[in-house]
Image 1 (tube, one colour):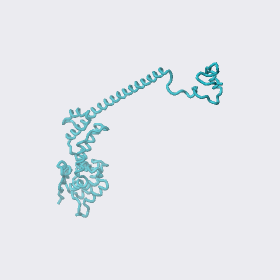
Image 2 (tube, one colour):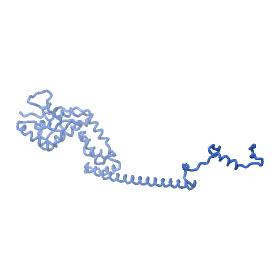
Image 3 (cartoon, one colour):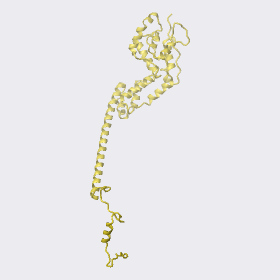
Image 4 (cartoon, one colour):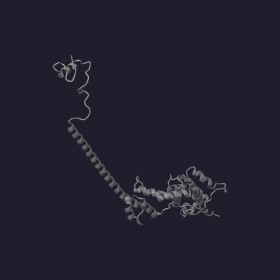
Length: 308
C-alpha cells in the first residue's frame, strides 16, 4: 500500500495576516506523490543535480537571517516543480541544500533504516512545518512588516535601490504585500520631488520596475537641479568673498595715505632722543647745556641763585 500524504496541524498565530505564510500547505509541490521507491532512490543523485541547476548551485540556506526561511521554501518548491520532483523525492533532497549546523539538524529528523524513532518526520509537509516552527517566529515577521510599512527613501540611495530594498523586505516578510500594495508603498516612500510624478503614473498596467525607472528619471532631474543651484551659490559666495577682500585692501590703503606712512612701531635702528639727567659718561653735554642757557649780568640765572 503506497504511503499517504500527511498534512500536519497548522501553526497557531496571533495575527490573522501571518496565517498563510506560517501554513506549510503554502509551500506544496505540484507532484503530491509521497511514494519513494527503490528506483527513485537510484536516480536521486540525478534529481538532486536537476534541482540544483534550477535553484542555483550555490543556493544553500544557513538559517541567517531567520526570516529568509519563507524565501528559501518558495524557491525550493518552485525549483522542484520545474523538474517535476515529487514530495516523496523532495523530502530527501531538501537536506542537500542546507549548511551546517542546519544540515545535521535536518538529517536527525529524516527517517533512517531504523524506523519509528521518536521525533522523526515522515513527509515533506511535516518537514516544512518543522522548519517554520524552529527557525522563524511571529515577532520577527512583525518587525519586518513594520519596517516595510515605514520605509522611506534615504538620502544616500537612488530610486532603483529603494525599490530593491522594498522587494527584499517584502520577500523576507513572506510576501505580505502584493504587487499593487508594494507599488503604493513605493509611491509613499519615494522622495517628495518625484512623488507627484510617480503617483500620476501609477496604474495597474505599470510594473514595479517601470515605476522605479520613472521615479529615477525624475529624481535624476531633481538632483541635477540641486547640483546646479549648489554651484551657483558657491560662485556667489566666492564673488562676495572677493569683494570683501578688495574692500579691506582699499580701506588699508586709505589709512596709509592719511597717516603718511606705515602704521606700527618704529624700526630698531631709528635714533632715540633723551630728555632728562645727563649721563656721567658724557660730561661735555652738561657744559653745552649751561652755555646755551641765558644768564644775568652778575652771572646768575633767571629764577635761580648765584652760580659763582
